[in-house]
Image (tube, rainbow, N blue to C red):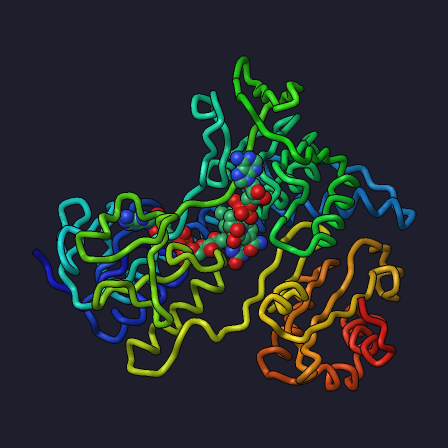
Length: 453
Ligand SMILES: Cc1cc2nc3c(=O)[nH]c(=O)nc-3n(C[C@H](O)[C@H](O)[C@H](O)COP(=O)(O)OP(=O)(O)OC[C@H]3O[C@@H](n4cnc5c(N)ncnc54)[C@H](O)[C@@H]3O)c2cc1C
Ligand SMILES: NC(=O)c1ccc[n+]([C@@H]2O[C@H](COP(=O)([O-])OP(=O)(O)OC[C@H]3O[C@@H](n4cnc5c(N)ncnc54)[C@H](O)[C@@H]3O)[C@@H](O)[C@H]2O)c1
């Protein structure tokens, strides 16, 4: 059995920099990875999906330019689109390998599991270490629909290997992946239908967010089937047939399943080291990333946290500080995230409902895109900006922005909330005209007018 100072299981977004930093500082580090280096984000998540959407949105914007009097003919070279996606992904993946190797991390390409207290085995290698960090992420959760398992359905893992654009595509799931990749396929020319089991897309967000996105999807000729259950899936002669609960049938050459995630803990044998899982299989951690076993920590998606790269990466920064003896915890961060549909959704902090559920005396103001000069000039009519404030302290608690490049603009709120300043300061600041940014002080001004929603 080998001995190390640190074992990292899984090369996720937090595990990579942690392993590299420790090794660079002269510690003996072993990292186990059962698949490709860099985890979901780089290989089958953020990087390829956003590179894919760059092409899709270029096509979508060109088509919608007809609203400005510009008529473009679009020819999509799908193999070239996907080749670019894969080459960006591969270059990111190579840079991860270089970073780990240059730092002196011992990489073991094998599925790791616990074989004793703070003992990890993967392939032929067994290692004991005083500190172990689990960063094993999540995988697609595949619903138990009769017939599905026998078909060549796509998940985010296989999607980016597509070589030809399917003429027709079906997507099960109206969450992040379903909407981003579904809209992407449609904008590249696939006739796309999205199947949603409830009555909303992005059902964890305020209802107006989903309503706005559905209007946008309809403009891309996407059909969204609400309150619909898939009863059966069959695949013959290159075509999927989905039987719905209403007995209608849908057919397409591709089927993407995007119905949520499950934690990668099934093969970890976590109990061998005394690490407890919650009822959904996520690793239980305290406010300092500590599991129920002394010396064993978990970061990122597998610890049941909001599944975003910047969360996993920030976990790394905080855990590194904790391991260096600093007083840090995980719960005091301002959480922001975005959905890269067009229009985008940029979110930070609390919604009005979330604030009120916490017993905060909160209210919100909303400005529609149609009231923003920049949006009118650019022809972006879908979306809104909303800000939630605490009536007692005048501090800004959260924001929801749906609109052009909202993922960028929401960072203004992130900085303001992090700084803990009041909406008065936002109202007083002079922003550049005509920009989307200048709508933020305008939003604050609605509070003076007492024009609340
Ligand atoms: C299609 C898609 C798009 C996304 N887009 C965004 C986005 O735009 N922005 C954003 O912030 N987030 C996005 N995410 C989420 C983001 O990818 C994850 O939140 C992020 O990668 C953090 O993951 P992680 O660090 O927890 O682990 P991961 O990146 O999932 O890495 C876990 C690693 O552990 C390995 N592993 C698992 N079990 C074992 C084992 N037993 N032994 C050895 N190795 C093991 C896996 O092979 C994997 O490499 C997206 C996700 C998907 C699927
Ligand atoms: N832009 C981003 O940051 C980004 C992009 C993609 C993914 N992600 C992360 O990855 C996570 C996973 O994405 P996702 O889209 O798989 O999950 P999700 O949780 O966002 O959406 C899953 C959707 O599938 C539906 N669903 C579940 N079971 C179903 C069934 N049997 N039939 C029909 N519908 C069903 C759910 O109601 C939900 O709407 C996200 O929650 C997010 O944290 C982030």
